[in-house]
Image 1 (spheres, one colour):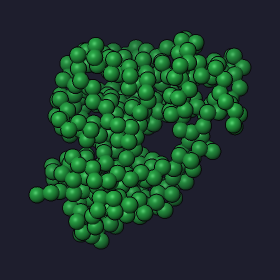
Image 2: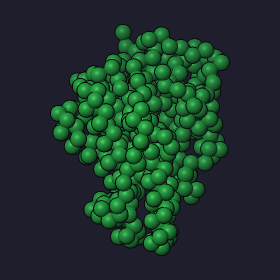
Image 3: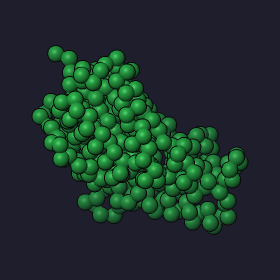
Amino acid sequence: MTFRLLAIETSCDETAAAVLEDGRHILSNVVSSQADLHAPWGGVVPELAARHHLENLAPVTEAALREAGLGLAEIDAIAVTAGPGLVGSLLAGVQFAKGLAFAAGKPLVPVHHIAGHLEAPFLAAPDGVLLPALALCVSGGHTSLFEMPERGVYRLIGRTRDDAAGEAYDKVAKLLGLGYPGGPVIDRLARGADDRAVDFTPARIKDPRRANDFSFSGLKTAVLYHVRREGIAPVAPGETPSKTIADLVASFQRAVVQSLVGKMVAAAETLRPKSLLLTGGVAANSRLRADAAAAAARLGLPLFVPPIALSTDNAAMIAAAGTLAFDRGVRATWDLEAHPQLPLV
């Protein structure tokens, strides 16, 4: 029997809705980005994000149902991101989904945002993902390593001790006047630039019990000190970034990717997974994709990376995790709340 699930995602600044059939077939995946809204501020303004979710949720959900060619009555369940994320943004999505599910008489499934990212590679792998797997999840708010012994089981083995990788990208871009979001512009400027122009090095975690953890705060600070020491001025509006800045961000990106891939390789050599997964918004970065693929080839392991549309925040991944949770009997009651610090268990 066909099972169709409608998912809502509003953990940060994208309003998204998607319809997934039988946990595999994406019937629609609609995303309304707020990047232009937050660009003048150099980062997400939580209050603005929440207000725009309230405006966008109904039309985005209607568009997802229309694209899927379905009415709400033909949906079997509704899933929503319950956390982690910005509390106002999460509240907008959770309250909307609760109202929709109650009015339509549909079961409601709470989903962890990171579980969505970890399930995204399965949507892009028609022949399945080899398990157990080692997953590197990299985004603006999270940088973590997970061991996945089976589908839907996630064991955290490493996480960032301070800034997430995507957060470091945004802060460096803001420092240099490159705009928001920082990841795409730094990725673009770094192509063809000298990534050894500045000798940035990844942070070293001295505690052997934290060997799989990441740290990007020191690298971000190293960029700040270099800019001050060299007298590098931020790019003025409408100005083309100089070669000096292109080389600087290429060197920064090299150090970030070196840390991410290096930790993934070290963990893989210890855990011996059957495959590697790379997911999250920063997985859209071309240098990270290329270096992760090269490392996987050296290890003799397949690397599963979702396409960019499924790497950045979207509702199809929430639908995948939601379908899995539904099959395991997970249901929310009408007192479901948003949980900005929700742990992944």
